[in-house]
Length: 364
Image (cartoon, rainbow, N blue to C red; front, side, top):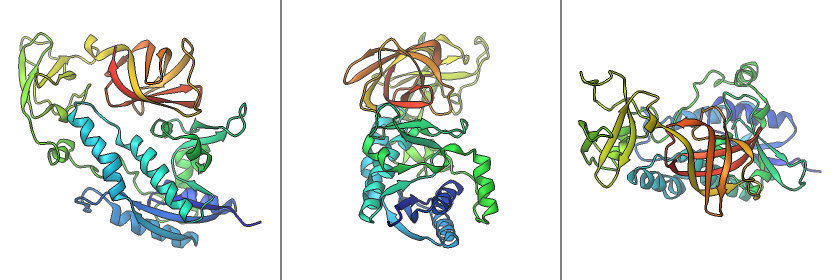
């Protein structure tokens, strides 16, 4: 019987490198695939794809596996970046990493891997996939054992076909263990810094990047009472809960507490700000989300206690599904949640199983 062929998304980072190594040790036939997803101004200052490719090739050579580089820039621009700009222009704050996983890493990449004769694909994501013990032939997405690195939030839009063909070997490891495995194996990227944020933005100032595609449209910054406190460069450059970059200090008659973005009035082109992290306008009992995706293809139950995240790196918040239709879900939380942001994703969990979720349209 021939060995199963697994195509691993090799990014040049330590996680995907150890993923490939573990699978080879487990007896799979492993092939590496390096994905290039961005070409505009791909320079070394902000986007490290040249160095990443060098690192990926070096790891493949060390492990004795084949590697191919594939360019998905067009697919990324059409399926992910266009949506990213539309959402910002509409005043929302999207999460392109979620769309990138659903459209590029587990669709374009999966299709390409199958064309290479793969039985399965694998990535260095911190998550787990298993066959549902109560429903053979159905697959579940689970949180990683390393809670500080769990990436199931970014993977909630994966479907049954994608999960059935995917391996997440790092799901049972802690990050420090992964780095130690890489050191012991002599991989030259064992201590390489984790990539943060979206590659096409990198570490550069976000507003400066967005201005290339969405020109400035200045307007007033006001309090909820209508008092003018400053001016903004364009509503699309700000997100709810934002504190930095508002360029308004405390005034004498004000509380002296920091200012936060509380709302956007798109019709008037006004940014509404409040003072104090716990201001009532920043706190919400619940939310409405649309563009729903449920991983098991079975909807969650209303009036049942689940947990949900409204942004990555947020602790799970106990909640109930208050109302659920084919197109929309209304979630109520046990405790008020801070700065629930339209465009971000609300992801629902039952214990460590990710059920799915949707794109937040409103806080309520």
